[in-house]
Length: 202
Image (cartoon, rainbow, N blue to C red; front, top):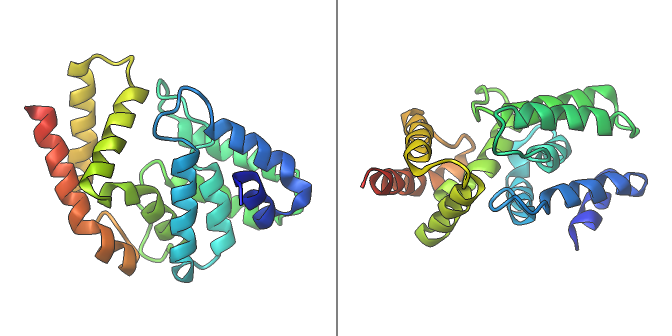
């Protein structure tokens, strides 16, 4: 099933134009990590973790929009993606409460810090950060792709900014929130992050 068909299966044939636009956004040429492949990986893991969500379809919709706006030179991509979701989903027959839920979830991916009772937020954040707990080769490819997206930033400033992000992640009590994601990804994610920090500081 291609991406647009996958969107239609979720949101209905009358929303195909939305799926088509989102597919095009994730195919923008300046993207190296935040691509269609990342979207598919997030959607697949949301499906795996759906049993832990309160509203799995809202989480799936939020996954579609979470990186819909991506400009590495801006710091408000999540906020802009959330606004895009609000605007585009307002033209569907989704209840306002569901649209509001989706918008909130997209905004949550800015900090990846869902509350303990926010099951939907936990599933989305775990799916989005799962790459941190991937095999070392895949993690290295992810780190390299992120560096490519920030090619306009000189090494000195990129290394400092990236190290700040990574140290912030290590400082969290837990990177993952759902039991299966924590069991599957937590330890390897921390090892991957420490390895990247060593390379950045080398």
